[in-house]
Amino acid sequence: MSQNCIVSNKTRNVIPFVPFEAIKNEVLGTDYVLSVAIVTPVEIQKLNLTYRNINKPTDILSFPLSEKEGEIYICISETKKEAVKFDRSYENFLAFIFIHGCVHLKGYDHGGTMEGIEEKIRNKFKV
Image (cartoon, rainbow, N blue to C red; front, side, top):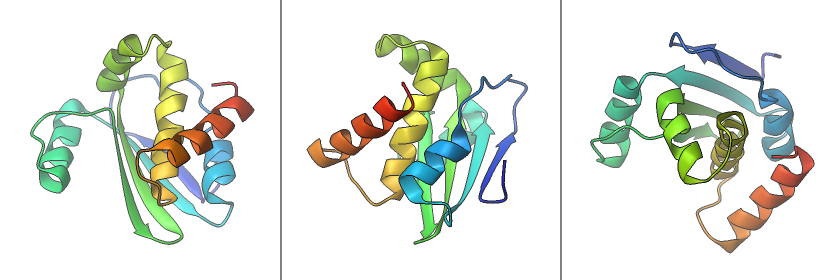
């Protein structure tokens, strides 16, 4: 990984291969600096409570820090649960939600435009 996409695993989980940097570059550009943290349910629940006032773990949180910098937090155990709900493999769903988080960092909110952008990126990466 380059210095523009840094992935840190703060858990004991083994993370399957996801082309984090390539996806980040496609959605946000090569100049965008992204930190991706793989965190525990306890950590993501604290973030979810602090920033969204929701007191439960979630699969992903995205935080834009500036126009060219952001952070994404991913909880593997929540990702595995959500993968089942969406009838996707865990590996596929991890890439799916990473794309979703990057599109949020691009400034889009849920809706048709966001879904269209995500579909284009998913097709490119076969997600």
